[in-house]
Amino acid sequence: SNITRLGINGVFRVGFLVSAGMGALCPVITEWIVNRQRGLIKLAAGNLAGEALSLDHFLFPWVMFLAVYFALQCSCFVGTDYHDGTVRNKIAAGYSRTDIYMANFIANAAAGCILFTSYIIPAWCAGRLYLGKLQVFTRSEMMTYILLIYVLMIALAGICTMISMLISNEALAVVLCLGIMVALLLLSIWMIYELDAPEYFEPAFEGDDTTYIIRGITYYMGDPNPYYVGGVQRVLYIFLLNFLPGGAFMDFFMYMNDTELFCMNVGICFLGAAFFAVVPTIAGVALFKRKELK
Image (tube, rainbow, N blue to C red):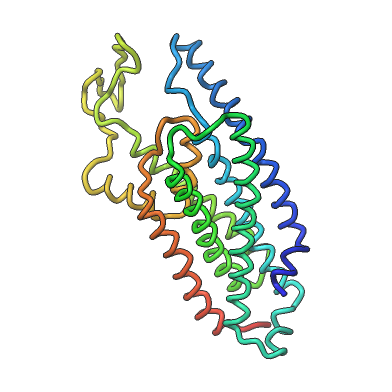
């Protein structure tokens, strides 16, 4: 019944259409953005930065926005149960709270996989027509990344289902789900920014002798960078960037303007996604059994 309800859900239908349209347009839009940025760099520095980008760079950047929309879709879908009072009806009909919770989680996980499928198929077809074949990733690597995003969508379903099932107020659940998703992305941006600082000040181009004044201290090219993150702190940041769901999405987004993924460890990404799919679901079921349904 949840899958049937998902098919007629307005938020899901809009998301399906937007995902398909975004997938079809993402190769064209992404290439335009990258070429415009490089054109500005050429005007400013007299040279083009980076190497020619290919289909590999344009398939995944906009999945980050799909993940944010999916958080909205999950909370709205589950919140309807409370808003319409159907949770009580299901219990009165003899379904256990575990059945009700798991049915919502499975429906949300299926919705996430469907939304990503509606994105990746048009993106792949449009990308092949517009940009040609893969040039960086092998087919096995590409399939691994696609599978990773499916698992990440299931992980987001686990987090959002837990929040939405434990909070009866639909509006509050929507705000919390969106807030957590945005917070995960912002945390990933901050960690990438910290890790991206070079160990030493390096010239941007040959003959660059720029000096930097930081807190009253002048630094020259080749001097140690006081903001470089190293040691245990760097290892921790890299682990969290791969383990938390937002890290992989942000890494894919930044890859559209770079020649390689920042510091992605696929094994840790899968481990983190599995953790956030399973642990919130187990905790959510246990807490939902104790929840007082008004």
